[in-house]
Image 1 (cartoon, rainbow over the protein chains, first blue to last red):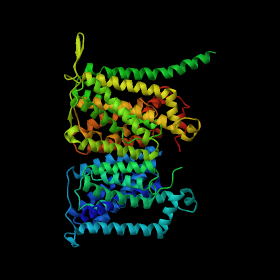
Image 2 (image 1 turned 90 degrees about the vertical axis):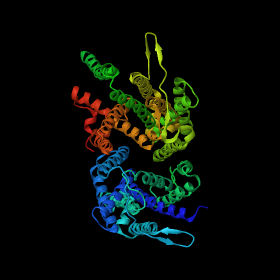
Image 3 (image 1 turned 120 degrees about the vertical axis):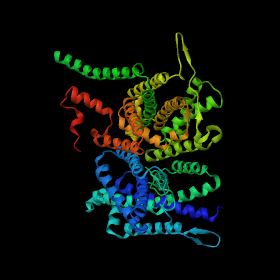
Image 4 (image 1 turned 180 degrees about the vertical axis):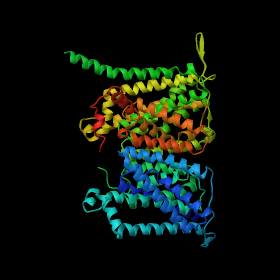
Length: 283
Length: 347
């Protein structure tokens, strides 16, 4: 049994993966595309909050808000300007893959290639007797809980949420009932990108920031939604939790092999249950 | 009657001239070392040839409807196989080169028999995971692969040819012709395969797998064949890559290289098994190489990604560069009015 600190680390990592995976699966269920650029929105979120705090002197919480809004706007622009104009699922997928390179390149030109760090916003540790947690990690976990609760409320108790759920199930029927799927997909893209940016913001004080930090969370979020079942929101959350915990707990035992075990496990799950843990059976 | 002959003549003419032009271009590329032996130009051509082979492999797998995101892993397998054979087991170059293709092909076949059952995005994720596993193992198995320091390989031995000799250590020219030969053979085999019944079987398996199965075609058989053949040639390219650069490190064959292979293939055009990947690899590799010489960090990925996005945005129906070639002949040279590609641009 690994020490509690490992589990807490795992939980903090899970928070990032869950937030990322949730946004990615939301975009997938409405737009029908896998947004491979999701990790780069995470990276841009981190970078914007870094500039907001260090260069413009904005307090961290407002920085999160600004970062979420800016990245959501960028996501809408990309959706409107590029993704809508490319025909064919294959080509849309390739465009989002190419955008990874473009956004990372743009970020390295503006931000530089080296690691930078953001000062810890909430110093101090929470002492719980047997182990202790830094306030920063507590904040990450609580904040993710709040965001997920907001998402739950929005999806289940608002008109937009109802429309999103309807359009995810039956886009044509939803549009017959007066839901503009086109408009909805823009909103969903904005929400998904904002979620990625927020995930990038809240962990910005914990990890070094550079233009390439989006890659690992993107792959992890992708694996999470695939093992959870493509198109299933519950699956995304469970998948994110599984991967986050596995990543840190296995790493405790076998160091670098943890990634091998992780990927092998994903392959195994997909071979045994290609539709994922929570997906509908494939025909 | 005269009209009939005229049509035949015209049709042949229209098939014939573009092929002659392609032949001339290939011949000119063959003559490059005669005009210039500049290291940069030659290594650029060699590397784009090697990536073109990998992109051809990707296109062949895509023909059967499977979207592989782990093609770079086969280059890594081939490269490491021949590097380990020559460095640790003291094999000569030529057996290790072919063994690399064989090992990569066998592994592709074994893996393919298990994972090709799964289709669509799930197959992509599985190959992505497999590719990453290969990279992580190469990175951490220090005793054999020397980790990120890389294995140092030696060039192929000098081949005496009577009055002159092919010396791989002295210049890049032998590598250039060797790569050209390998890419040419791969291209020819893939092109012939695409034209033959097996190529049509591949397309059938991908276009309508229910119907194909109903007609008694085994999906798995064709998928495994395509995956294995792609693995063999990608492995050979990887072996040549390792010996050409004289060092092989894990980081040159990660997920991002697999993605680049895929982008090269798609931008080049997937309607042709040989031409599209070659065009895509040559254009994108030389673009990337040129941009990375500008010494501005970040400019290379920015423009690389930007160009790919632009190509996919503005090419007719997003079909890749190779269709521009056809369009060029039909629209600009022959000025055909009723060309099929014109009518359905609207939707």
